[in-house]
Image (cartoon, rainbow, N blue to C red; front, side, top):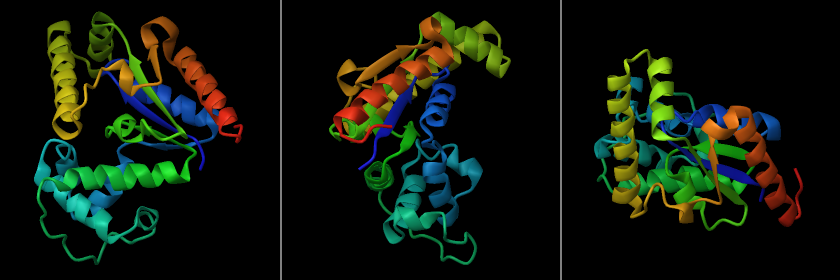
Length: 217
């Protein structure tokens, strides 16, 4: 079982950039939206609908049904066209969606997973490093304003909304506090260390865990 890095991040903290840098440095697979996007296509869910998938249980149910019918390893080998539409399931299928894909990736290892509550699901895996990429609120507001071309007031509103959505997501589906230090083995502050520095800290931690597992990377 190879090492897997599971990342949660605050909007404006450049968590995706950090995770991609970590994946590059470790030569790991990087998995973000593609964890569910392929299943979404197979389920007949549009990219536009996928944007709301983590908020709308019925869409998650369709994706979960595809994942239940096709093993995760087969998803990327199945042609999108020609499959029957997936029947609607209950919104409780969300947990099945996340657990099947995330755990399947974790079993293979050598991956960096961003989002999708992966740190909650993998916190007890001996081969997992769970990471929270954070930064001070004011820093994140400035980052979002620059990256999304918003004024500071609009950026502040967006950061607060996304923080609330992610906290609600963890609490509703997993009964967990998104920002609790108990969920994470490591928290890195990109305002202090930058993207490169944060990535180097995570890579160092990953290599320590891999050494303890007896499979250095």
